[in-house]
Length: 348
Image (cartoon, rainbow, N blue to C red; front, top):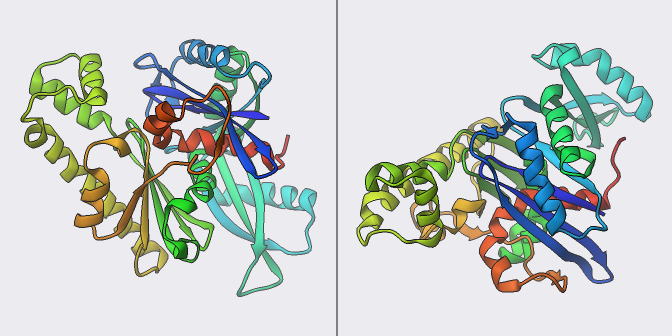
């Protein structure tokens, strides 16, 4: 089993899953705050500081699990679907992709780590197969490997955050109306500084985009409005320990900005994909639990919205407190998607 470790700018989240006869079991999870400045815009700035936070996770989570999966995201990650000859085997595909990668990727190839996954036969040309190509700056990948190793884990998989969120989506299907499997569902994972916008249609991941926007904007409003330190503002935000007028002074303006960001992301997806509408919204990340978000998006954007819980209906290990889990579950979408990599093959 691999521990899924989501390295964020505010915290590190970890999830450990096992598989039983009736589905997945959440064996354990952990969340540890990140030192400020150690991760900025999803890039690790201080490997040692991140490694020491991961080491704390290591001590909290089942000692049996020594392997880990982490993920890259942001401007240094490129994903695209390319079309290759259906007759090529895995090795021939790898060679062909390497030859063509130069024209597909806007970074120097010696600075990039590549991987690919064969999807399905191309509908319009059955002699071609759709292949998902992923490329990330090697320094981003290596920084995560080094941080995991500094935290006493063995790095087995470095994934892409939007794929991890898409994988967790399957676990959230039971929260959505019955027809969701056949519909267009947007998943909005709102982190501290980055929002991942992914879209799934009929169970297939069809679109993803990162936006530089997150819950930290709300914290900064609290800092400037109530003259608090950043840490105090963060605590006040989480515990809702704010003056009576905060709803009008800081919450409503943040709700407005949040709506604008999600509207813009939906519009961009519709324009580029040729789809006509998004049927359902699944909101995750720390900001998902902010007061009124679910109702606000359902009413103002007019799309049925649900706050994601990847452990909905899942069996829980003996060390997991279900009430505490319910509070943090939306923050664990990326970590859960990474933990799910335990049950699929990976290239080594």
